[in-house]
Length: 66
Image 1 (spheres, rainbow, N blue to C red):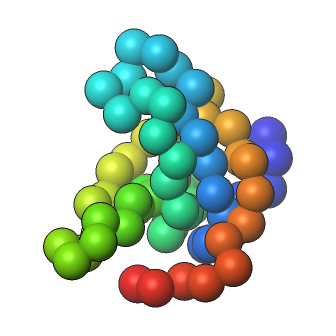
Image 2 (cartoon, rainbow, N blue to C red):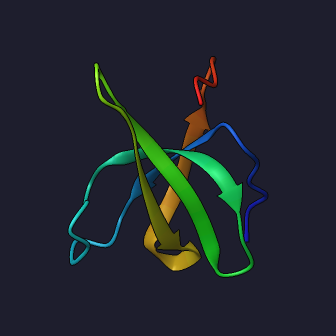
């Protein structure tokens, strides 16, 4: 398992997931997966929880807005 931290960017890889293939910014790392968010302009953050096996790390965010 790869090491994740707050601010990492993940992409949902499970094509059965309703948010596939969204990118999320990791907010909290949990034993079962992560809680991440998408920033929606003029509305705020939409949070989502996803298991480790359903995403891959693709990078690290430059700024943490929440």
